[in-house]
Image 1 (spheres, helix red, strand yellow):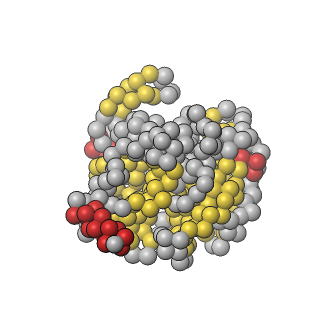
Image 2 (cartoon, protein in one colour):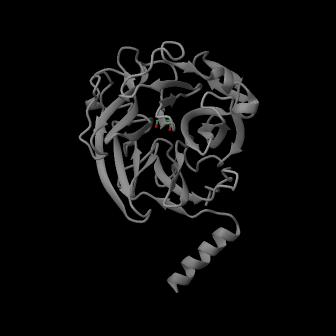
Image 3 (cartoon, protein in one colour):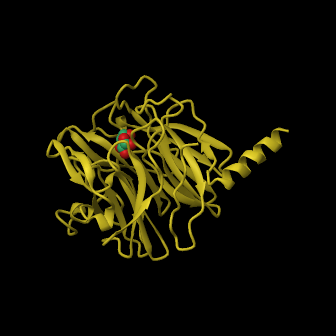
Length: 328
Ligand code: FUB
């Protein structure tokens, strides 16, 4: 009987276009999920909203893994601000993403630079996702500045690695082969500013009134909000991102060059239930595609106590990402 009910609801989900949800089992909150596949294993790197948070209270980062999307291993809190001596301690451990290269793991994190008193990007290195993680440079890789949060990392087919990041703007840099320094000959002191491209509706979607932290008031800006998620399929670069101001939805643009121009491709989701942020990313694993993001449902709608959710979806023949229903 139970089996029939599960099958019936699965059939109903497929018939009306809903994607069943998977939740990473955890006793802690798991915001800002960043999935990565290594061999037969999918790892999810997340942040950690404290149970008592009434504003962002995020002291550390966590790792989970699975081989089949059903059984999960919780590796726990494996990295904290304590690793980054230059960072504000015990808080502001914001979004992150990790990547494997030549047998080492590199974890790029948002943390508060105590010199600039603004978020910058740090990097930690380990032999495996479970750690131990160390800070190989003892300073921020990208020093603090307005909007310098939410790093996403990608290695192109020619071996060139890129780091993108940003809130209310998007910036990117070329990582050197060592993955812990940037190519300072690229852009302005190693950083290229994407804001002129972000301002183009054809590249990043319709403008709307949004708060701009640098000018301290609302201005007309395009869709891009924060949380870039960069990857490539075939010869197409994908940039997914939190969009639309708050509350955020998930959207994407594509390009034939990592330097743009980008083409706005539309919404992937509507706004995340119970959370004004949505941070996530899509990934392919064992022949299926999954969207990772966070919502506020387990906390009863507290946008500072967010949990990872996963939705399976099917890419279009042309590589397009369908609109994914995250409301059910
Ligand atoms: O989790 C803290 C911040 O909220 C992240 O850095 C943003 O992407 C948003 O999810």
